[in-house]
Image (cartoon, rainbow, N blue to C red; front, side):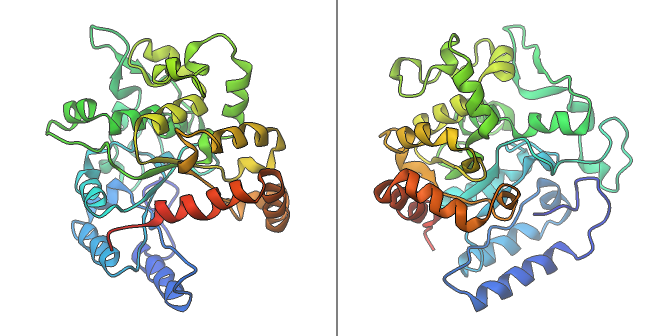
Amino acid sequence: MDMEYMGAGSIRIPYKEQLKELINLKENKKNQIHVFPGIDPRRLQEDKSFLTYLMDRFSSKKFSGVKLYPALGFYPFDKRFKSLYEYCIRYDIPIMTHCIEGTIYYRGSKTRNSDEHAHLNNKNEWNHHPILKVNAQSEPLKLPQRANHDFTKNFTHPLNYKCLLDPKKATEYFGDQVDFSQLKICLAHFGGSAEWDRYFEDIYETYNNNLFNKENIGKATAYTNVQKIWDSASWLSIIYDLMATYDNVYADMSFMLYNKNNFELLKLLIDDNRVGHKILFGTDFYVVAQKGTEKRLYHTIRAELGEERFKKVASINPENFLKTKF
């Protein structure tokens, strides 16, 4: 994680030194560790050599993928990612991105440019969505959240990935012909356990009735009634739409596995031929230690899923996700 730009003070060890430590660790455990360095668009802007640094370490197999953590104060469709994304598509580099509300988020001021890297944050634009419009008059989607933790979900919201993966929307925003629809990207945590609950509790809206329903696929990521979808659609519904629509969109089930209420639906999703081949097992160690030991989680999920499903999500699917042209 690159935490230098989150407005929480200076980091104790320079980021490249942290990455060097990871590379050294990987050298000692060659086949056991896949390094996914956290990439922040503000570092790409401030350090023009950083992208070359990354590319060199991907081609030499020191790095295996990209980690994004938008909650630190950026959107996944940030224009500063353009060259990185093009590289990831060219070499099939996997991207793991945080897609749940959490405890790590931008800590600086939304209204005052007081942090050290304020010139890299367009905070005046944080009150509305940069791409999504609510009507034909091009009125932007309103993002009224004021507290840091609250407006974190604006950066992590899964509809942001529709904006990134839709070539037409991305081209309009970037002002250049781009197509990121083939990005291999995992939306970590599958939206989170609370969003799975929201899916079950809403029995009326079609955008929350899309799972396994061919007629309703796409309604949770539609550009009509955007404000309502943004505010009310379950993140599970949105992520399912993205997985069913785009070939290389994955999701993992880390942390939420402590809630056994999720297992039955999870089994149905793993068996779903639209998305089941793109679901990944993850433990979210050490965060899950709040709920129980790693060992207990492993044995519980293996027993609940059965050996065939477990092999699919813990071995076959991850192998496809991690595979690159290197």
